[in-house]
Length: 150
Image 1 (spheres, rainbow, N blue to C red):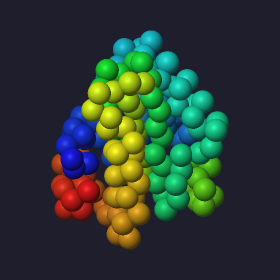
Image 2: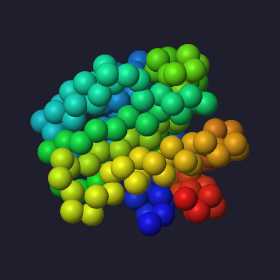
Image 3: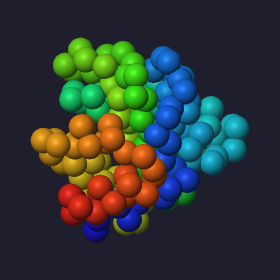
């Protein structure tokens, strides 16, 4: 299993428009192309998760994630906010890169935690934050995942 297999170019946005944590979450959710009711339910689940503790893991990266009935299989999205926003990250620094991970409550393939772990592993690579900042296209993002072979 490789991380790049889970991302599609239509769920990658390199110029997020939101300026608050809530706006960024809603924008990431919109990349999954769900119906309006499902988007609202997913937003509430992600907010609940964020209230437990920020998913901003430091180094300019956040990994908002949850399990929800609005998806029938594991779904992921990536968004970048070049100016960065306050996401209440553990290092108190702005977050620029957002990896959204959503999975159904029960998934036969059980990929939720392995994918979450792989995103965290990818984020810890020394050159990843800087390289994410230089991407020009969703395809370059997928190529970076492939180069890291995570």
